[in-house]
Image (cartoon, rainbow, N blue to C red; front, side, top):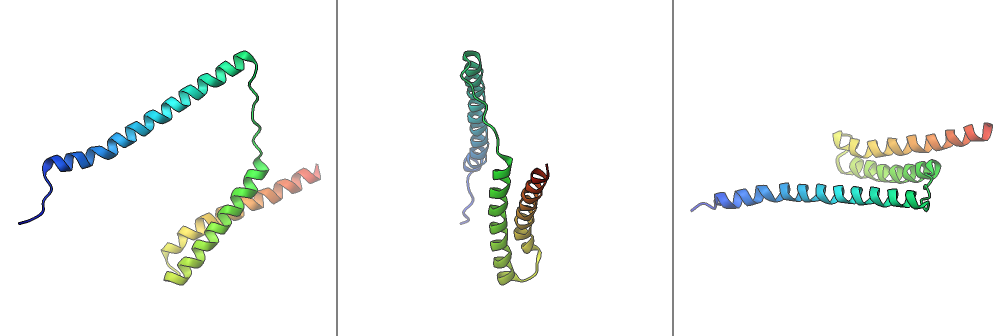
Amino acid sequence: MQNVPSAAAQVIVSIIPIVGIVMGCGVIFFYLLWNHKQRMLMIDKGSYKRIEFDGDSFSIFSGLMLLCIGLTLVIFFLIKEGFSYSLLSGLLPFSLGISLIVYFILRLKLLKDK
């Protein structure tokens, strides 16, 4: 006797991810809609303050985080498998982290020269 799932079980298992994705999209849509309405009301009442984005802090923070994560993955995959394609999963965040830190340093030098 083989354990073959019934057709109803297969349909239910295939519908669950679809329903989850649709519900997630609905939640995101209503969040964006209500956030937009809230901002419009705040602008009408004059109580809205625009939040300034600090690109320098973001670039150094995310650069250091990606550098550390990438370095850890590179060391792990070098020890586990040696030089192979799995090493790319550590080299990508490592190189992104280095590029963000270089951007931060170059931006500091450009701002200092002005």
